[in-house]
Length: 155
Image 1 (cartoon, rainbow, N blue to C red):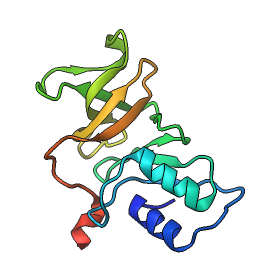
Image 2: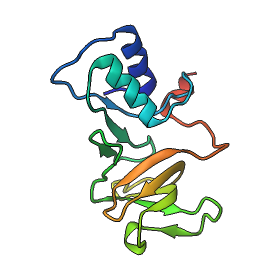
Image 3: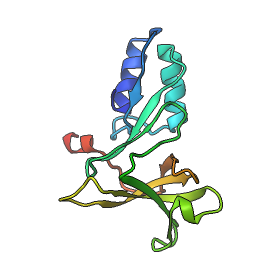
Image 4: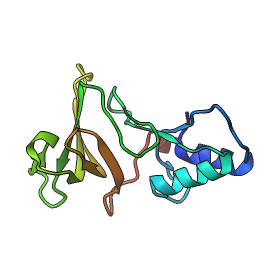
């Protein structure tokens, strides 16, 4: 398990053929490398480390819960965490998976009911696609959004 930029640094320095290994990236370059799509990151890690799948975690410091992908880029939340999609041009137009006739694409909002004594609702700048079964994909960041990440304070 590691932040994306560190896993890429490791894979470039120590290329190897791993066996019986699950590798999970936790997202983000944290300002230390050029941004890449999740698919590009996974392709590099798969090639350099000989893995067929790279798992992913989606979460943030402000929330207690995380969503996980088993290597297909489709994230699943625990029952107490919900993803909603808001319109990029109208932040008050928010939809959930049950209201839609098909997958929704827009900006990700998160409700995390594990956050009892802190903020339970986050409006991110992450673009995503929410599917009818409540799974979701992260497509990238909105244009001109701030760089985010818990490691940025150390820079």
